[in-house]
Length: 208
Image 1 (cartoon, one colour):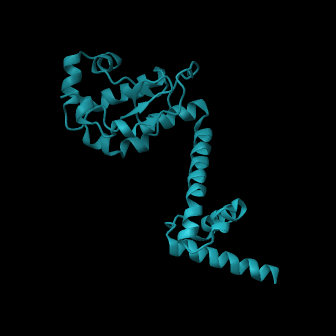
Image 2 (spheres, rainbow, N blue to C red):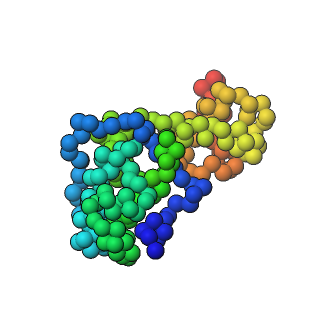
Image 3 (tube, rainbow, N blue to C red):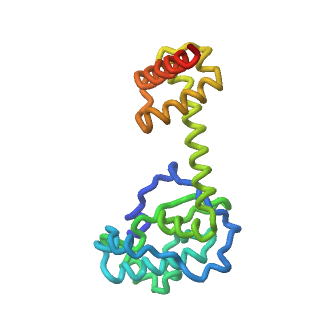
């Protein structure tokens, strides 16, 4: 049994699109940001044996020079080569209860490759590339698009009119009102109805 079989945690239909393009390089990246407190207190560090921990660090470092940056291959022969051990030794390490591939997940790269990425290694690579802010902005924009896409139906289910649900300005105002006054609460019909009523009352008070 290979590590990829034993520690597969993401189904083939759930692969994320890796956010760093394969053409991007870290040519001037000669050191890696390392949060030692995060490492010392991680479940992986406290559960893995010393050999596994050492090879895991090699994987973290090797990923900085792979393409795309921050990923590693899925082929066990290439993984063994990356960390400079024989295939037999790699298979022994991969068969342990906590393996060097702990928390590495499959992803789809922009060139179509399926490779492995680690959330923490991705954070480090994005920080080095100055892409973290751009990625977070994209995620925020995606969340907003999904919220606004669902809100018209939620307005109808909350008792609102079709005209309200088709009014883009009203939908945007209601979305912001929900964010400001209801935070991360699930937008059930009763919550959306309450927000609509409060927003209307406040609007009437201001106009009166």
